[in-house]
Amino acid sequence: MKIYNTLSKSKEEFIPIEEKKIRMYVCGPTVYDYIHIGNARPMIVFDTFRRYMTSKGYDVNYISNYTDIDDKIINKANETNTSSQDVALKYIEECKKDMKEMNILPQTYAPKATEEVEDMIELIKDLLDKKYAYKSEDGTVYFDTLAFKDYGKLSHKNIDELESGFREIQIKGIDDKKNPTDFVLWKPKKENEPYWKSPFCDGRPGWHTECCVMAPKYAKGRLDIHAGGEDLIFPHHENEIAQYEASHNEPFAKYWMHNAFLNINNTKMSKSLGNFFTVRDILNKFDGRVLRLFMLQAHYRSMLNFSFELMEQTKLSLDRIFNSIENIKYILKKTSESYNENDDTNQSSIYNFSDKEKDISNQIENYKKIFFEKMDDDLNTADAITCIYEIVRIINSNVDILSSRTFLIYAYSTLNSLCNILGIDVSKPLKTSFDDTNENFDDEQINKLIEERDNYKKQKDYINADKIRDELLKMHIEIKDTQLGTKWKRV
Ligand code: AMP
Ligand code: ZN
Image 1 (tube, protein in one colour):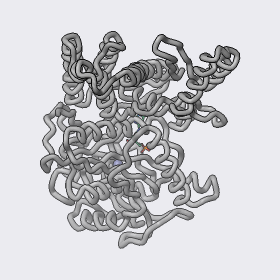
Image 2: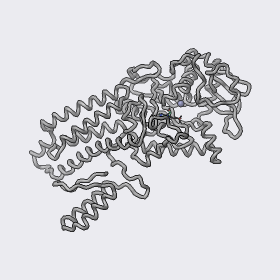
Image 3: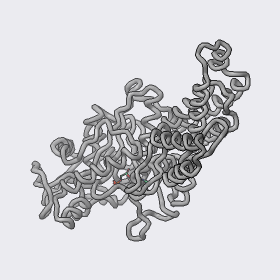
Image 4: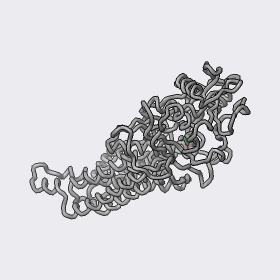
């Protein structure tokens, strides 16, 4: 497996610190509102990486935090007359719901910054002792970037070019900084803000100190992979490296992975431009699997443009995969009904591939091989998904009522397992109804109605049979009468 390492600016062979184990940390969201679709990109991309590496036999310790103390959270609490803790807890719960809908596996550890402040204070004390940090008169503690010789190594910037990060909160005493690139490790409390007691002053930690304390704590050491969006390379990740490496005197992470940004209609997503969507907005219109496929259809290091038109196209692509699977399941059901266990001739044709099927399975295996090669090449999900479409095409033009049971099962499990690696569960039908008053109907309910309709048809009661057809249509179920019986699909 090769992954692009921002640190070396090249694709490198992935070699974990401990054999078959991965310690991985992904910077999580600041929980002051519903997460937006930009936040969903690293979640989906790195969850897919985790799933893929797990499928290759790695034991992945996947750590992703919640930033639950931040100016934005404090502002929201003041606006809504609640505490910042209540704001954070509410949006952590909402974030978990969105993650579930997007089929993102729960983190192995999901630390909250506010619960780790003691350890952050210890790190800051250590940096002060080692003369990598200094304290100003008002109690603000800064990291001395000139004291750390490797500063700038991740963003590949010369220290002279570097400016203090845009994410850094403007704090009082900012003029006390020795260098513009120095950043805050601890800031004094302000009125109506949560604070912790510390040897420096009553206050709270800087954002960059949070992850570099939580990550090694839950990874039980340095990391194999540290990941996040590309906006975090500088200053956030640069500053994390400075603190960890100055204190521990060892590399913080072997590989740094960064996803490119998601834009809306080719412009940066922003509330003021009115082109801002939360994940919840999208999940109210599309199944989470459509959003997931949409995100993975681009390489994670390429800019991704979001539009509803592109989402509709993605839905059609996903429908093609689902239709292919439904078709296999339908034929399997039909053939197993006519299958006689005691018939020897039947047995041999069912349990072996025919010559034609052998040939088709070779074609499928070839695309499967390419799928894995692409995934091994810096998680090229875009090209890997193309292989799934090729497999769907081959299956659609070759699977029919004469296909052997073994071949049908093989075709089904191939699609199922490749989609599963991408976190797209094809075992459950796609959600088609997004109206709260309209529930999603399961297969059992639909089959029951179809059976009822078949009975009416047998009795030549076409009026009632048609009534059921209309009822099914309202449920977004389209039916087709075939020689083998009634076929249905969700539309
Ligand atoms: P934040 O809540 O802003 O700290 O962001 C949480 C994660 O989402 C970080 O890894 C960010 O880099 C990432 N992120 C934020 N906005 C976008 C975007 N528009 N596209 C891709 N990733 C983003
Ligand atoms: Zn972070």
